[in-house]
Every structure is written in structure tokens, then in C-alpha cells.
Amino acid sequence: MAEMLDRKKLIEYLPDFMQKISEIKELMRVTNMESDKIYPLIGKSLDEAFIEDCSEYGIRKYESCLHIISDESESLETRKLRVLMRWNNFMPYTYKILINKLNMLCGVNNYDITADLENYNIDLTVYYVVDESELTALLENIPPLNIFYNIHPAKKSVGVNRVGMIWQDDEIFNLRQVII
Image 1: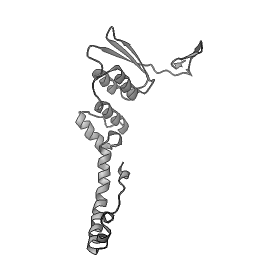
Image 2: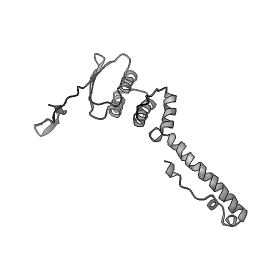
Image 3: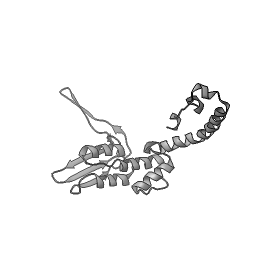
Image 4: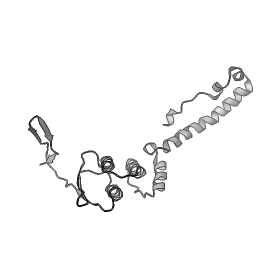
């Protein structure tokens, strides 16, 4: 984002008759030198203002605001994802918002969710998750307190992937990948 700060020399903002005065030329030259030092810092501060563009320094500030304690071994991208998940916690919480957040944390089609709302229960089978502690925090905050949730991590198996498909009356039903 810092490279977006293209600008003209300061003297170019003055009327033509002022650009010809030697004292003004010198003043603008010196001022330009100082502004050349400031502009990269302005660009850097703009980068730090956006979670997706910030550096280690910026993500530490966001984590501090949100009371997040990170591990030194975590990547910057994992930390940004955690901050984004917490920063974008908004109400009202709906099933659609839960699905969007699960897609963001686990990836699309990397989980199965079964909601038995009559019995106030949600079962979540997870095939891949970026951060398990963030998944637990998500499920503690979004569903109402009277809904119980169970997380079932999928077993990791070694085998051959097969995809099943059924054709019936011009309709195609795709099935989940099965590891044999």
C-alpha cells in the first residue's frame, strides 16, 4: 500500500511565477528532502492500519487490543487469521455467519456440520482446521449458550482417494471423498 503514495515535487504545486524565485526553489528543495523521509513512514502506518497488510509490529498491536496471547512459533498469517476472526465478531449470530466463519477457519468442504436444533445440539466433524483453539473459541462465542456442540476431528488415514457419483433420472449427486 505504501507504493500508492506517488506524488509530485512540492514546487510543482506553486504557481509558475513563484517557481522561478531562487529562494522559493531552495526552500522547496529542502522541504522536499524532509518530506521524502516522511512519506515512506506514512505508507508504513497505512499498511499497519489494515489487518491483512500489517507486519509483526501491527499484528502485536491488534492482539494487544483484543487480549490475544500468541505463541512465538505461529506464523504471521495464522496470527492475522485469528485477529480477523475476533475483530469481525459481530451480532446477530446466525447459522449463516457460523458457516461463513467455519469456511474461513477450516476451508470450504473441510468439515461436516449436523445441527439437531430440536435437541439443542451441533455436531461438527472437522477434516482440516488452521487453529483448533480458534475453532473452540468460535464455537464458544457464536452459538447461543443453550446449544451444545461436539467437535469430532476426522481420523487421518493413509490410502487411495475415491469420489463416488450416482446418476438417477438426469440428476447427479456428488458424494464426499472416501479414503480406502
